[in-house]
Image (cartoon, rainbow, N blue to C red; front, side, top):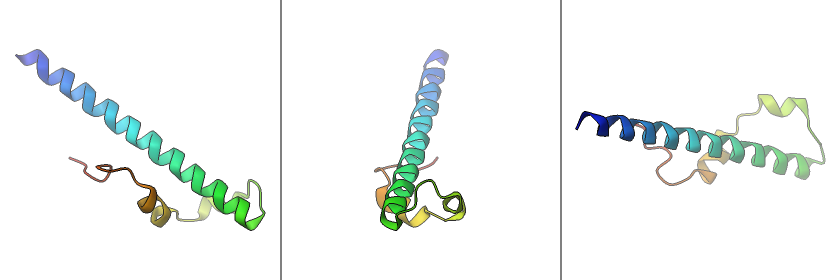
Length: 67
């Protein structure tokens, strides 16, 4: 039965990776949306803005449940 835990571990890693990619995608989406509202395209100053509040609204269910 030792082989089962490795499979579960790999599934957890895969899921965390998927969730991280989804968060990054949501952050980029928020940046693009803010850029369109301001009329600024690819503003380098956007990299210094904290998007955590917007990401919390766009967060997927169970994405905050880290082990």
